[in-house]
View (cartoon, rainbow, N blue to C red):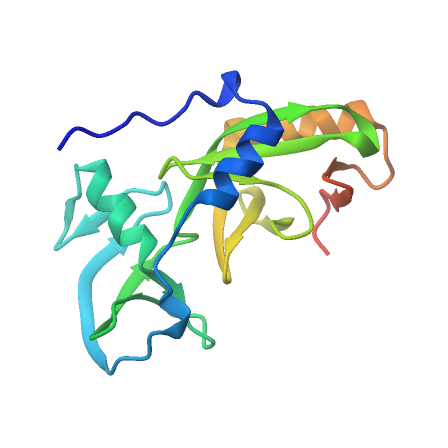
Length: 187
């Protein structure tokens, strides 16, 4: 079965990105409550690479399928869940990585959208907030994806965010998207 290539982020308007994000149909993992069945022998590395039994999963379609059944439990664990089983999955940082960014407008009227390593498109805003944590190796920006799942913003994309914050001239430095302000200093 041939796969449809993902749309080019640069060619889409933010309105088109928001429409595509709203149209994305995901399984109702929050309504599934099967018994815990163990560990999946899977891991998501900090760079967003998915592994099974120590080997990278090389098929993007498989990664997207597993990502669609990923859930964050109230205790912070990540699980893969179906109607009949729930398996733990190790996540080194965040399960997704924001690898590309598009901006329309400026200042308080700006709108920002991100492409994830799974080709999901996420418009930043009140429902998909940006947050920033300070770590020993520098700031780590995160984008809320869905139901407690986040994307680590790739370093190159973070630099684009920082440039945008400098253009804004806000104090504290930060970025606007869809009417929400996201301070780049950790809370």
